[in-house]
Length: 73
Image (tube, rainbow, N blue to C red; front, side, top):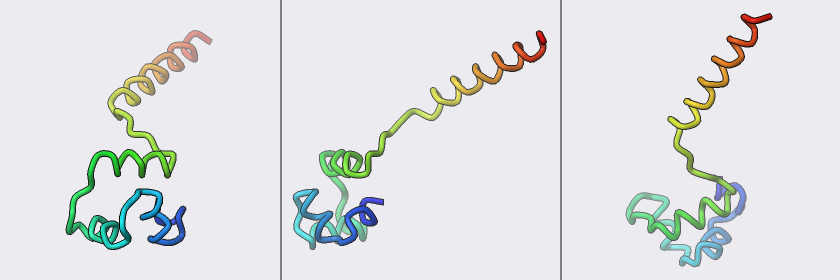
């Protein structure tokens, strides 16, 4: 999604403060990503990493609450 937003690999490389060849190596898997680069990618794409199990618990609790509410009607 970062590549789509940037429209060009060179523009994304500039945002990440990488040489275009360094970005290309990361995208191809030749070189691994550093944490600061991943954080910049997340910021650029307005993406957040969340714990799915916590979200699942909240949804399950909400389902149970709705079920109890509907049974009382």
